[in-house]
Each structure stands twice: as C-alpha cells, then as structure tokens.
Length: 159
Image (cartoon, rainbow, N blue to C red; front, top):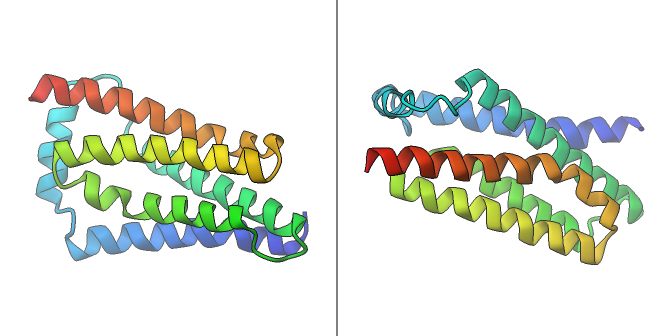
C-alpha cells in the first residue's frame, strides 16, 4: 500500500468527522432532539452506545475510502464510473445523520434508502469492476441492514 492510499482512506474519515462536528455545533440536531430520541430508544437493548456507532461509521468511511483507492489504482490513478458511484454513497452517508435525526418516519425512509443504495452500489461494482471488491462493502451492508431492523423495531414500539 503506497502513501496515496492513506489519503483515500483518511479524506472520507476526516470529512465525516468535520461534517458531524458541524451538524452538532450548528444545532441541526439539537441536544434536546438527541435526548428525547435517546430516551425513546433506550427502551431497546438492541442499540449499541453512541460511541460504538461513531466507531462503526468511521470504519465504514475508511473502508469506502480504501475501496475507492483500489478502483482508482486499478484504472491508472484515474476515476472510473465506480468511483463516482462510491462518492454518491459516501455523500448520502454524510447527510444521513441530519435527515434521520429529524423525524422517525424520515429516519425509516433514509435507513431503507441507505440499504437499497448500498446494494445498488454493490451490484454496480460487481458488474463494472471485480466481484472480489465487494468484500469492502460487506460491513456497510451488514450495518445498514442491522440499523433497518433495529430502527423498525424501535419505531414500531414508539408509534
């Protein structure tokens, strides 16, 4: 792994960290929303602590960055269509916490969208690149599937 790989890995992680800092600092998701939302969600033992969720997303962004690097390197240090598709998934994941924090119904739609988009990206990469590249998307797909299941269980108890 050469030094440019670290740029591809750290850039999405840093951008996600800056975006989350901006979201909470600007008050897009207020602490009152988080508290009331967390109080509702504490009824479920299926949810991991917030710090674990942050670590999982950091790992996912790093894996997306590494997959971007693999595809970029394979195409002679140029962008391929799969790179643009990955960036679309990455940008969706960046706005994900803003929109899911607004309302439960919006969160359900965004969670389902993240899962469907993940499978579409996986299919496109398997078709346009190599099927072995999908290993880097497995954590994302597993996490979004888990989030969909848990969020639906929690929301069905609340509503």
